[in-house]
Length: 105
Image (tube, rainbow, N blue to C red; front, side, top):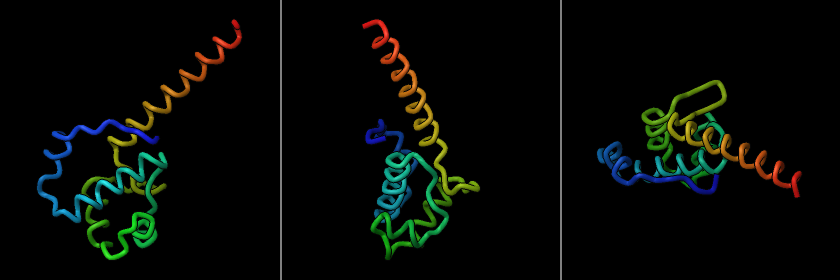
């Protein structure tokens, strides 16, 4: 996904307790998950490298523990994955619709 809705008030109500660097870590983690549509690696050092946050591994790990769930595949933000699944479903429906339209043309 290269786009997702961002509710500013909802975000602020859940993150107002974060330090500025924690906020940056969380946003980059969310952006990465939406962009790649898959769980985040359990290897904190590689995650920090990918997010350009090498000096912030403690903050990244804290944000993963607070806002993500550790699964066998990696870290998942449940809300992000719900939206990713909705996006995938809509994409599949749109593809089918396009194929049907092409059949009639």
